[in-house]
Length: 454
Image (cartoon, rainbow, N blue to C red; front, side, top):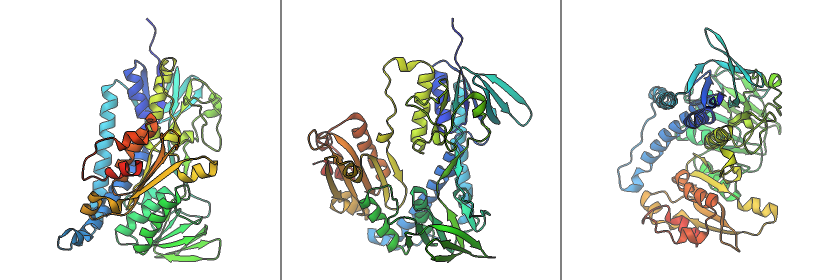
């Protein structure tokens, strides 16, 4: 009888805990090392609290629109004191759920910081001990932290990173958000919903520069209607702090005076002190490159999640963890589907929500590829009119010769849920006729998917 595979995982986020539970079910002897929170700091300190706060803002916005639904107008007030405990309770419950699952699978959990001592040795420093572990396979999944440029002195009071804002010390009177990517626009939406005046510094000529222009246009229109100031073509280069204010200076001479500034300009991988050199693992600007199996240049050492430099999505990290567990246990020698990053669905929790998957119209145009793109507004949806929110659209990109769904974008209410239909279609290679001929619920927002597939 062969000995079980000794699988050591550094990092208990979506990649690490998924790999741990899956490998344990497959018979591995798993040790999981986590220094902060089981479930992942980026996931439970960033993603979940931000979405909880957005849900609060969305509820406030819905009450403000209640007059259009045949109800007396209601204007809910914001309770900052209850928001922190609500976020903490959600985070604690999710973390406890992950821990319980790991324990049920027999995963050994160590609270501390781990590093590679050599290709097959891991050292874990806990509060009370230093433990050396021999490993047949190692997964590095230590996540990331918000990027802070050298010209910004974060103080957690007036000049904030995203992790200082769940919730912030106080609701800003006027917030300047630096960064117009996914995280930046979510914070714009969140604080505008809470009643803050918001200015957004947009380094290019549209928010969400990597998204479809039609998608960005809907979001920009909504921001402008809510009084958000957009400073396009400006790059922040300094933040001056006063006793109760900040001034953000841009490279084109423009300045924005506000009560608070928030940095949302990307992340930095947590690769320091991992002992990469000791094990011969190569890195690139702090990231650890991997192949389609999740392997680093050292075959039995894997990397996943933000550390791998792939799509920084919890869903992607979880699937990486699953695929890596299968590979470490030898299942890649059987039927094994590789993770296709080009088919990952993503969502932005603004109002209206934004979601997309696969090939976009602009990407196809840039590649000179022939496509068929169809777009249906939610203004034609009975359910959207019933709900009193007909903003946005569904756009489906398909192959004109075969009808195979190549991608799609959705802007509107519940877009993060609706995109699952298109994600399944893209992953499974379904045709637009497969969507058209599905008997969907009426009235529902999903009917717009069938209309766009016509």
